[in-house]
Length: 499
Ligand code: GAL
Image 1: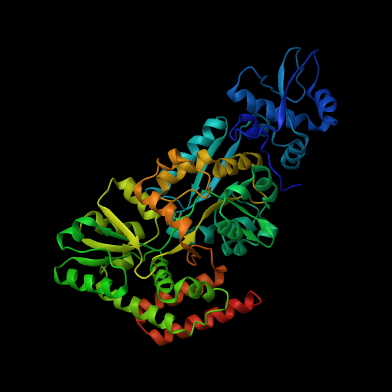
Image 2 (image 1 turned 90 degrees about the vertical axis):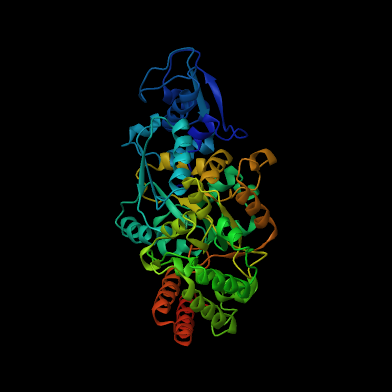
């Protein structure tokens, strides 16, 4: 029961119009909350749940009584909101009597994420805005730790979880990343929330499968991102009469031509230490295909495969055409090359689309990474609920906003990702930019494969080994040695996973 939710406040607020698990109740003679709780729910201990639900309702409808204390005399004629009994139980499982502010919808909501870049920050703020409309008395604390893909964030958040000092909710990739947080010890399973919200009916099957770890849901997804996108500057492509490359031969032909013209053919940043590994992941998808790539992470595709060798050779060749300052730039720093029309192509996830929007840059085109047509290298950002969240009631409201249609439209139109929910109407889809509309179509049609660098495909230790091997390769360019390191990393990880 601990795992359940407040919901009461949110449902009472009508954030999800189809669910109203409660009822209006008008007091006939002066009484107390405990007496009403006894009368209506059969248990006087549910008084705090009625107080919280009624106060939440009164935020948007002042005809409901605003209740200032649990002992307050409730006058005749006062209108209360009585939550459904199951929900009242859920609330009581979370409510801490030492935190009376929860009954007013006050206190704080500490949200942990690594969303500080353009597009990322705008998306997050859009979610905050909606949350603030429903819970105006809650003070939102935006606890970001900068660093793309969350490698820095995870290193900071993990010791905090273990020390019992987590934020109320934090960003977590869907997939095996959750293993790194020992969720059974530190996180709250969200199965009941999924059940009540009916999220299993509005989220795609591939994503639902990815969200389950050890039999439970641990995060609420806000989006789906695509990793295997080639972005290009249209001005440069037009100037030199180029079309987006469909395979690596075409890609290198373009690179050769542009290099001769003094344009940087391909840009990347690797200051975060993950960007080159992101690129390599997408090359593996191209050389192995959807099934072959997926098999790398389950033990079905040997890492000694020719496709892995080929992928390393492609990466090695790309390094001949890359901006010389790549080690010093982050992914968005590298994107500046495109905006300035100084660099032609870049391979990065579609948060780049959000970032371009935030920079007001519209001159970009996109295509699947060469050789990955029909394959969607996917990842999803979710928010979780730590067991020791200091304001769990407020966090539950946050998860509701994240899972809601309203939240996902506001967030994703800015973030550059598509909603995780599949129940958008054509009018709602029309609010998304052309890239995102094409992305929605691709997601519905393509073969979906899990991203490794963004937490979906592999346990954390494997992601780290994979990333380290690629980073070393940038210096050594040793194909055979790197492939051996990748084979060893896979053996160690598969053994740890009992495979
Ligand atoms: C990914 C994350 C995206 C985006 C990107 C760059 O791991 O899922 O939402 O923020 O990192 O920071």
